[in-house]
Image (cartoon, rainbow, N blue to C red; front, side, top):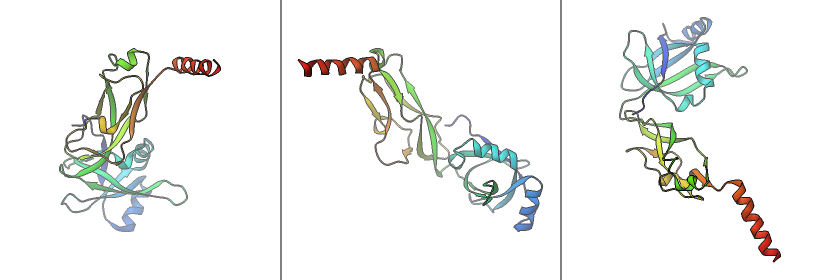
Length: 205
């Protein structure tokens, strides 16, 4: 399970419609709607500067949040749309979707590498090159992993590690269907240079 789902703080927005939304913006908030999850849609507002900071962190549309509204139970949500000003490109409205524990959601999960100290390829001087430090997976909202682990215990110099070689948590699957590269263990440049020189010498001989 994910150890820490980030909070998203909001408050109940009084009234619905364009008039109430305009009033929220005048008050320095971004109006929004929370829907789905077998409950009625709820009008909310989020402080503009706070939301803008969250958006600028990146991955906002693919992050599961713990929505906190004073006086209500926390609920897991994911953003399903951010409307922006056509000129200023600043948020003017946000739509959030409630998720059940059985809902499937696409999220970016960090990649961690195990046994780097004992990896045969690295011990021989190889260099671990990380191609992806996170992978987008489709997972259950109630069973989100902290990370996925790439075990380097038997990796040799020259090995290329694909997603198919990584043991994923039960129920999780990559969003990208092709067998993409996670990392590789390459020879250090000095070794590559020596090999190139040897090839040249053999050709000249």
